[in-house]
Image (cartoon, rainbow, N blue to C red; front, top):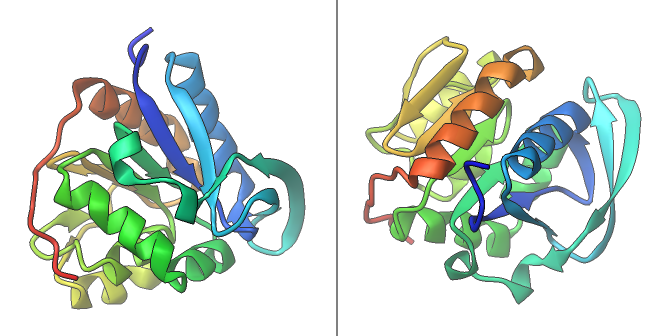
Length: 189
């Protein structure tokens, strides 16, 4: 079990996170032995979506972001979904939580629209990333070098484009989180 003893935070929006982008990485991390904590803006239940428009399932939220710190975890995973990612990036506590992982040099994974949160946290300057194609200009404007590839790793930051990339994304996040790879950087506030 590659991630035995590792603690991983998984963000989820109260509504609008893409279900396969939450469930498949969660299951891959759990199967690899990680201890997982699902975090959102508030406790309770999160409702996911499929293809941004179709209802998904309900998932328990373990902790509200105000009750945790990046120092409590070894790594962070952020699923996409345009509505969910937009809700996460609009919450300043979530943005600060994400930024703290970069300041501490801890590995982070983000898929699809999730890199919006990274742009809001101002941690993309000089990073090579991918994402859902429609947000590439946002990421470039945040200082990233955007490429159209299945999975991209840059100093412990793992990004992918969409649900079709989940097999490669899940394998890469397990690998990166196991190695604890990171590129510590100073993130501006």
